[in-house]
Every structure is written in C-alpha cells, then in structure tokens.
Image (cartoon, rainbow, N blue to C red):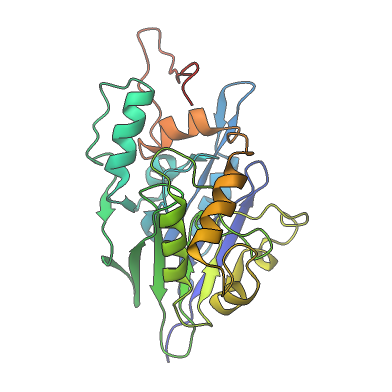
Length: 296
C-alpha cells in the first residue's frame, strides 16, 4: 500500500507566514519548510516559540528530520533553520542562486566577512535537482521573479495522490495574486514566466502557500494554506488564464511602486543569507545587526 503524504501547516501571525512539516506517517522521515524565528523589532530580541511548536510536533510523532528547506532568503521573517538544525538535525537546503543574493546584500550591508558561496547552507539546489524523503522525491524548480534565487519544491507523491508544490512567495492565494518583484534582482517578467511554469503542472497539483494575509488564518491554517493549480488558473487575480505578459508586468510594476518595505526586511535578510545563523558576537559579547541609511 502506497504511503500517504502528510503536510502539517504552522502559521506565524506576526509575518503571516506558513511553515510546514512534510512526512509520510509517524516515525517516518520528514522535511521542514520555511520555518520562522520570532523577532521583536522594538526590543531587538529573537525567540523560538514558533519553532518550538515544530520541534514538539516532530518529536511527538518521532519523525526523523532529514531536510530543512528554504524557498528563498525571506524579507518578511527571520528563519529558524539554524536553531532547528541544532534541536532536531536535518540538512538546511536552499537554491544555488542564493550566492547572487548573498553578494548583493553583502554589499548593501557591508559584510566583507560574509562568505558568498552558499557554504552556510548544507545543500544548494539547482533547477531539476531532486532530494529523497523516504519514498518521496522533492524536485527543485527555479522560479525567479520575487528574488533571483526563489525555488519552488515539487513533491512527487505516490500513485493516486496529487503532487504538491511549495511555492514560497511566487504565488499568494488566488484572491491576493502574486508577490512583489521590486527587491534587488527581482523581475516582473521573470515572475510571469515562473508562474506560468507552475501553472502548467497538472490541474490537481496542490499549491502550498508561504503567506496568507486574510482574516481568520491563525484559527484554521489548514483551510487557508493551499489551492490547486486549476483554481489559480481560473481565479488568481493577477495571473489567471488569459493574462498576457505585458499586462502582468504593467500591473506588477505599478503596484510594487506603492508598497512599503516589509517591516523586518533589514534584520531578516542579514540573518537569512546566513542560513539563520546570527552575526558573530563582538568583543563585548553582544551580537549586532546593521541598518544601512538611505540605501533601500
């Protein structure tokens, strides 16, 4: 009998982020996708409440964490990948183009000590690469646009189940459309092509979201974390079937020009390009993040 794929969503209300645990049953191998490290921007304090929920879930089901997967270097939350690795193991995975993002932000934040070769991560994925998770195969799909390094991860499921794809910030819920493309290296043209690639998958493929800003999500994350490819092709307000490249690019560029920067972009990027490791402590024992003035 083919194993059933289990996807459990966890929702962080502060950043409206979904994290996931993917497995095939108690005692099986598992992957954690896009985990959140709590951060209070007013106090400059990190916390692990959100990540601890995932640890408790993993330990409660006696799951074997093999992979901690990042869809990209997020700008709206800090990742808890490094802390989770210390607690439950697992190789931290991200797309190989993270090196481009590292080079960009090492310049913006003036981080001459930062290795820009992706070595902070345990595994760099290129388009088409696969990793095994028990009986499952997880395939990396390069979907640039939001950033040049975004990867979606398609889970090839056993016969009889629809595949699922963790799309990061490429697609939002159909009534919210798509993510912004105005970060360094972003491209609305690339976003359109990436979205059409995702929406060329079979119509019953499950699109697993990274964000949902609707009211009521925290009370029932499972009801808001996914839609099918077919639903996006019919109802996504930005990229439903019939939307041409030129119309999408015009909409996206006009909309992006009105958006404020994410509240946590400055701390988040500095931590996330380090795979969740905080900057090294200085001589007084304190860690510091930088704020570049009049740059972003």
